[in-house]
Image (tube, rainbow, N blue to C red):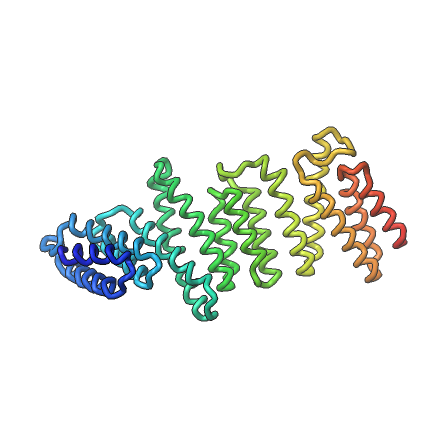
Length: 346
C-alpha cells in the first residue's frame, strides 16, 4: 500500500502523463489482485478497508489518466476488486463502465481504420450491455433514490453510444432493441439523438425504415414521465413522420409511405376538427411547414405515378395531397395550386 500511495503521488505530480509510473502502478495492482484472490476469507492478505481503498484508488487513477492508453486496465482493476469482496455497491461497477465506454468512444470516432473502429465499437457494445444489465438492478433497488436520477442520465448516454456502436456493427436488430429498452425513460433529447444517428448512418434503407418505425412506435407507447405528450404530439411527432415518410419513399416502400401519409392526414384532420373545423386554420401547434412539405411531396409522388401511366394511383395520391394542402394556413392557396397542376395532368 505505501508503495502504491507513493507512486500515485508521483504520478499526480507528473500531471498523470508519466507512462512508466502508470506501468509500475498497474503492475503493483495486478500483484495485489493475485494475492487477494488466492487467500481464503479467513486468511486475507488485505482487510476489507484496504480493498475498498484499492478499488477507489484504481478508479481515481483511471479517471485522472483518462486520455492515457492505460486508463482501461485501471478501470478493469477497480471492478475486479469489487467482484472479489463485494466491498462497494454496484454503483462502483457503473462508474467504471461509464469511464471505459467514454474513453473508447473517443478512440472509435477518430479517423482510424475500419478494423480499429470495429474493435472499439465492439468493446462499446460489450461494456454498454454490461452497464445496461447493472442498471436494471439499480432500477429495482433504488427507483426512489435520488442517486437513481444520476444513473438514469448516464444510462441515456450509454444507450446512445451503444446505438451508435450497433449501427456501425450493422446490428439493426440491436438498434431496435436499444430503442425499445429506452421506452420507460425516453426524453426528447435521447429520442432525437436516436433519430439523428439512424438518419446519418450509411445503413441499408430498409433497415433504417424499420428502426425509425420502431422509434416512432416506441414514442407513441412510451410511459416515460420525461416526455411532454402535448409537445410531442404537436411539435416532435411531425418531424418523425416526415423522416419516416421520406425514408419509405427512398426505400421504394410505397405502401408503407401511403400508410404513413394516411395516418398523418387523419391526425391533422382530427386536430383541425377539434379547433373548430375552421378551414383557414392549421392544426394548433402543428408546424405549418410540415403540412406543406407532406402535401407537396405526396403530390410529387402522384406525378411519378402519372408518368408511369398508373392513373388510379396518381389520382389517389393527388387527392390525399390536396386534402392535406387544404388545411394549410394560406387561405387555400396550396390546395388551389395542386388542383391546378392535377388538371394540367389530366
